[in-house]
Image 1 (cartoon, rainbow, N blue to C red):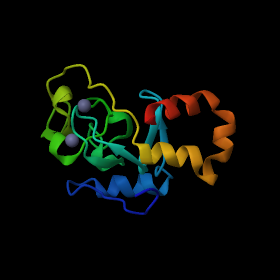
Image 2: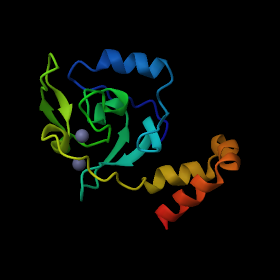
Image 3: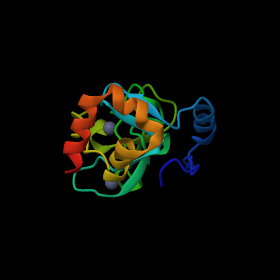
Amino acid sequence: MLFSASARPSSFGGGFLFDIIKRMGWGLGYDSRWKRYIGYGVTAYCDAPKCNEEIDRGLSYVCGAQEPYGGDNGCGLYFCSKHLFYHRFRDMEYEREFCKRCIRRRAPYEPKPEHPEWVNHLLTDDSWADWRKENADEMSRLKAMVQ
Ligand SMILES: [Zn+2]
Ligand SMILES: [Zn+2]
């Protein structure tokens, strides 16, 4: 569901951090590493290969200790609960959630194409009208993704 207030803080102590980020306007942000929008307002597919689970890009789904961009140990991609695993790296005090690749210190998965619902929102919603004027290239990239 797009832009609903359905924040889903993880049961593992993430609620507080999540609340702060939410108040700071992290319902929608831009991830410059992966060049895509993040936040709980973004509908997405799990980034694990062959998994089509629908999630959002809120911090309860990120690989990397619930930090935007994945923190020091995570890739910052977004995964459903089946593809996130608790792990404690040596510099961490507690176990947090990561994808398999990061736990094994392997290169990250290839990020999934954007969810058609989200792309459609970017391409049609009034709130993105100005953005569309300024981002023609990104628009055609997104359009190609859903065709
Ligand atoms: Zn990862
Ligand atoms: Zn998954």
